Image (cartoon, rainbow, N blue to C red; front, side, top):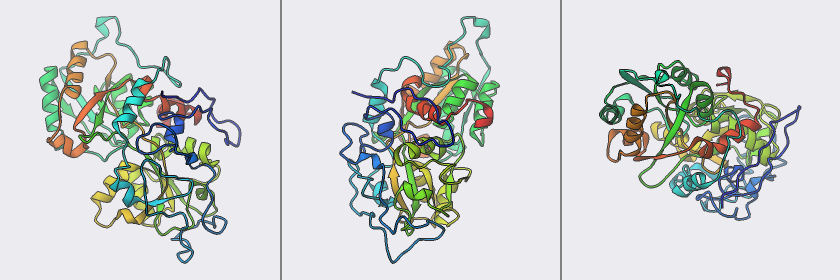
Amino acid sequence: MVVMVEHTDEQTGTSSRRRFILAGGAVGIAGLAGCSGGSGGGDDGGDGAGAGLESGGDDGGDGGSGGGDDEAGDEMLSDSFDPESPDWENNNYLAAPLIDATYQRGTQLDLEQMNDREVDEVPHGNPVQERPDDESEWLDPDTLVFTESPAEDRQQSYVEALDPLIERLEETTGKDVEFTQVQSYAASVEAMRSERVHIANFATGATPFAVNLAGAVPFAVGFQGDGAFGYRLFATTRADNHEIQSVEDFANDGVRIAHAEPSSNSGHQAPSALFDQEFGVTPEEDYEVNFSGGHSQTTRGIANDDYDAGPICSTCMKDTVDADNGLSYDDFKVVWASNPFPPGPVAYRYNLHPDIVEGIEEAWLDTSWEGTTYEEATDYAEFVPIEYRKHWYDIMVIQRYNGVDYESGNL
């Protein structure tokens, strides 16, 4: 049985050291907080979600820049990683064994549990808009415009890799299809709001903004051919920084922490809630947040000693390291990880003509992308249907906890 987070108020006052009302479980915030292992389900295995970690060094040290005390080492660093029971309370790991175990993604079980839970109402913001009854309000453009905004779970795909998708869309909708590139979450939401874009692949954290501001209807998410699903938040530092052994050490004096962007789920919204809940560490109160501009920038910034640590989208870290010969997974240490989040969904504008919507859904949901350039660029072999109120429940609860208002200025 999937148990979810109860409705909670947002943070209040000068200190936000409160806990969600938790019932425990696989896919609620307790699961997202890393209570369970790679499957994202079942019991927590007794690791306590990593709350109240003890630093393995001398009273946590003062953080600071550089690699910490090499002589003292990191007493929590383990070379034996079990994805079913990471035991974050007692361990941290180099990134390499996590990637080797495909821990950067979740499994089909995570998706199934999100799909099976009962949710009558969205916990924050507005529900997905329904198509107008008045046919004169239906949108029936001669050319459909599609965009892919920067995504939480992967890097930007190359335009030429989209050719199979565009050809399939033209076949199923009977319309010409044009791809347009955007460079930010805000730009993708505004493009759909103004009806300059009709279909978009939004980032996870920006999806509620798209629903509330742009009339987006999320309907599908990508699935890898091996059954891998979603992405995680990796709380990351450099491998040689022995003074940072847990998220608690993010709050030490002199530690420079990077977050990606304000609306980024794993890069800001989730750590703002989960670090507070699980470790009593409140970003922007216990440490200064430095916005790097994206997950790749955070990854490279940690490697280059511009930052000491930060929350990073797990698959974005993988993509960044894979694309840069100067980086290695052994350069990074992960001191805590969440359970999987859903990847950024494909969405269409709510007032599109129903015949167009039928063609859009057919193109994504009834097509195998295995062996195509599209799969090569995105890692997605197929797409599966989702419901916003169910699959984005935890994202909305996190944003509610953080007091997020769905306004364009907050993207």
